[in-house]
Amino acid sequence: MKTITNLAKKYELFGFFLLANLFSWVLGITLALEAQGQVEVVIPFSMHYLYAFGPTIAAFIMTWLVSGAEGLKELLGRILQWRVKWIWWVVAFSPLWLYGLIVIGQRFITGEWVDLSLLGQVNFLPQLNLGVALLLWILTFGLGEEIGWRGYALPRMQKNRSALSATLILAVLWALWHWPLFFYVLDISIVIGWLFGLIAGTFVFTWLYNSSQGSVLMIILWHGCFDFITASKAGEGSAAIIMSAIVMVWAVVVVFVYKPARLSSEEKQVL
Image (cartoon, rainbow, N blue to C red; front, side):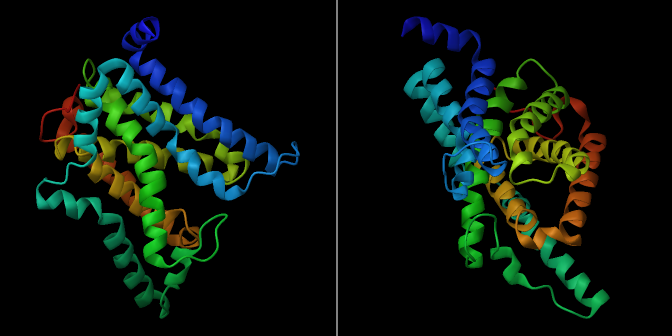
C-alpha cells in the first residue's frame, strides 16, 4: 500500500487520467462493440450515463491516495461551494436563459414556437419530464465529469503552468476521453466542430472556475445545463449550433480580456 501511495503522489496527474479513461472506456468500448455487432454481451445502452463517472471515481481514488481524508474533505468542500457571488449563479445557469433567448428569437423568425418537449428526449431513455431531464444531465455528465476535470485536474495543472497552457492540455486530454462515444452515440461527421466547441468550453470552464474561486458546483451546473440543451433531441437543430457559437466567442473574449496567465480577474485556483 505504501508503494502505491508513493507512486500516486509522484504521478498524481498521470494516475488520474489513466484511471479516468480506464473506468469510462471499459464501459464505452463495450457499448461501442455491442453497437457495432462485435460482441454478444447484452448491456443496456442506458448504462451510457455511467460513462460520465470515470473522472469522478479517479478523482476520489487519487485524492485519497495522495492526500487522505483531509484531501477528500477539501475536494468535497469545493464540490459543495455554493457561497459565491450571485453573478456566478447567473453564469452557472446561463445555458438555460441563453436557450430561452434563442427560442424567442426563432419564434419571431419562423412564427412557430420550438417544441420544448424535445428537451426530455435523450438517448437510450424514455421521454422524461423536463425537470427530470435537467437533473439527469447535472447529476451524470455534469457532476460525473467535473469533479474530475475541474475539481481534481485543473487546479493541479495550473500550479506550474499558465491558465492558458493548463486549459489547452486539459482540453486535449478531455477530448481523448470522449473517443469511444463516437462509435455508439456521437456522429463522427461532427468531430471537427465538436472539437472546437469542446476546446472553447474548456476555456469558459477555466474562467468560471478561477472566477468563482474554485467552486466545482458552478462548473457542474453549467455543464449539466449545457448538455440538457445540446445533447437532447432539441440540440439537433440550430439551437445547438448557436449555443456552440456563443461558447466559442465567449472563449475568445476570455483569452483577450483576462490574458493567458489567469484567464480570470481572480487568481488561479491551484493545489
